[in-house]
Amino acid sequence: MKKQQDISPYLVYLYYNHMALKKICALTMARNDEFFLRRWVSYYGKELGMENLYVFLDGKDQPLPDWCPGVHVTACEKIQGKVVDLDRRRLEFLSDQAGILFSEYDMVIGTDADEFLIADPRLGVGLAEYLSASGCSSSLSGLGIDVGQNMSCEGAIDSSEPFLNQRRYALIGTRYTKPSVIARPLRWGSGFHRIKGHDFHIAKGLYLFHFGYLDMKRIEERFNDKDRIAGGWSRHLAKRARTIRLVSRKKARDWDKWTSAARILQTFIRPPYAWNKPAMLNMEIVVKIPDRFKNIV
Image 1: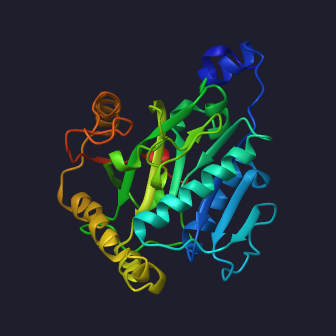
Image 2 (image 1 turned 180 degrees about the vertical axis):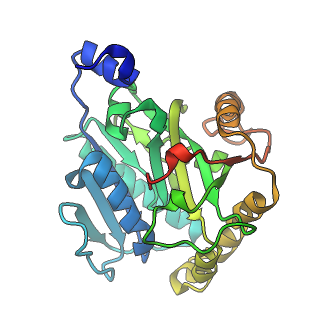
């Protein structure tokens, strides 16, 4: 073993408490979204092992991918309904699946295919090591980081290169401070935004990067997707394009200072209509993503 001062405190904790890594899996549901799903499988496969990923395709008309060997992929009956009702049913289904997985796993990560739970690289540990040492007994949230395209200095995304080599700006977003990690059977609310009947805990050094609005061209293409139009998503997507406007126009603040402040604010401030969701006084804080996050996603 290396000298203690050269080792992450998370690994030291595991070593001195004789703890093995917990068994952790990740699940998601996608429809016509191979662009993000490929990245999701690549990232979580590297962090957790491909055999610990569970992908549910929304609709049996979706072809089973041949590019993710080892991943558990299931094509399901298409979930019907407009945006709000559809998402509620989707999370009911995924909560049920997570409950089943606890017969085999200690923790379950649930995210959309464009969301990536990342332990700060300066901690020196991967996601599995971080979560194993977290002491989580209920749920954990990463601080929401909504990545956008800065139209003044960033071009179209190149799918062959890491996202975080091409995007440097983000909005600290309460919408994406989600209880993505659960350590026992619980019920997620729509969009993974809350745990029904339970509070949330924002873990220090843990982030949920959301990439759904990293490229204006992709957003415009989504407006023309017939399934999303039929499901009432056009207004939703247009509203969310505000992330691109904000990161393009507002001055970027210091990452470490403002992410630390945001964790405190979001922990203690709650919207009056949902005590188990975070709020931040409607502040719109744009930050510059540090170089240490490059090459991760």
